[in-house]
Image (cartoon, rainbow, N blue to C red; front, side):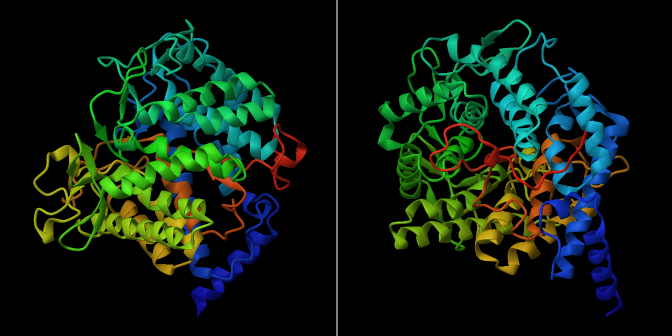
Length: 511
């Protein structure tokens, strides 16, 4: 009883605190003291992770949380372009960490630029993390600083669309030289990468009025729609010069995931008016249900991979976003209640399977990849696979699915499962300087990989925080999250370009 009273008093004091971003976002007044306490714990984790980065790797892209030093092996290399700063401003903002936000804001205002980067960087990653993060902050604040910084990055990406002549973007760009090129050692484009641009390019068009940005991604989608596809499925490899499909591999995991995610989310963000995106999504996932959805002998639903139409009974951790995808996608079947219920049920079943991949490890954290139908006991485990498959990289996909299903169903188990993840992270991943991934989730005291990836704060902790918050914080009927966890506002019907109504009323007045 004393603990409950203390938590309620703490909640009252939070309501009275004018500096709290949570008050501005309108979710104060929680009746659930337990969820409020859990949310505060996630906020403390974010503060700890951020401070570790700020003290030991500031300006660098990511933190080595074991050594207390910069991690220079990230997707953005050794350039000091502040991936963890730009990627996490919106997380700090949402959680009301004002002092931390102010420092990050000032760095972005004074220092963030790609003009000096004479190295090939990923088009997809630059767009998802930098453009996405800056656009979220523009949506929250209406600040022209964030608009101009986001547009600067988008302009750096445009050579990827023009270098081949096919309309299929190349994978890499050199920001300083303004040239594009293929991924090192590869000449095919990847489905998830070319599908990871639509949300951001559409929104930057709306707020700037420059149609060219949206035209690039619309022409790309038109091309993909009109291409002949094997059994109406999308292989993950595409030649950017000839626009021909590569080997027939299909997956909702690495190399495929974002393409399907953005088909649905572009429809949602259009205010459910973009019929092309909805039709493409329905066709694509309909074929996935036919060819890739399976049920293991132990009764677990999974999404397998296809190799020349042969099903490989394996899922990646990254595939676990599909639980949330199918649940959100049920709304695309608004004129067919049977199909809508079917897709929601598939989402729930996939969430259960991914929870099992966590539950069946001594650490309570799931592996990078897990198999089915070896034996019932080994379902949803990485037992017998290469050691790299047994790792845990602080990924967000499982908790993202929990968050979406909580919002759609309010089934308490999704919050309970999310809290299990919080406890496991604290028990096994917290270090002196931040959080680290694990090399083997089947060893309670096994080695850590030392990496605190930017997406851990931008996605994993953000989704956990939202899981324990009221639905009025970033409601799903007003916001769509890009694949990097950055919320973008749903476009108002019949409003092509931005008006003042597109900027939320509940924003903090930071400098």
